[in-house]
Length: 102
Image (tube, helix red, strand yellow):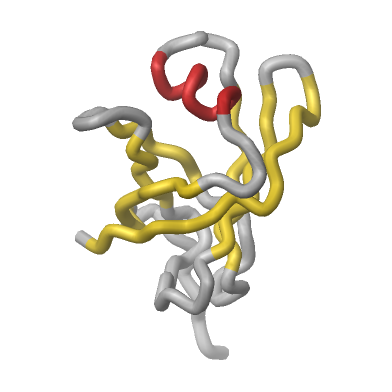
């Protein structure tokens, strides 16, 4: 499990209770596949899973997050500023896009 420290470069409410979050990895080697997720550290020992919606190997992790339930993760996401440090673990998940050679 790898831990990353990223910086918010985008934090935008795009609909009621929905936020678009862009995290700059500043050259860190984060390699994910379509369908994987990360666990964002939202407190001292608390983390929340969010699906990655950015293109692999882009240097930026993008997330589209619903904050409707107003739990600790939702409140953390809503409170973020640009720029702000965000810590996360990942990537996780095996439900990924399989490629085939024909």
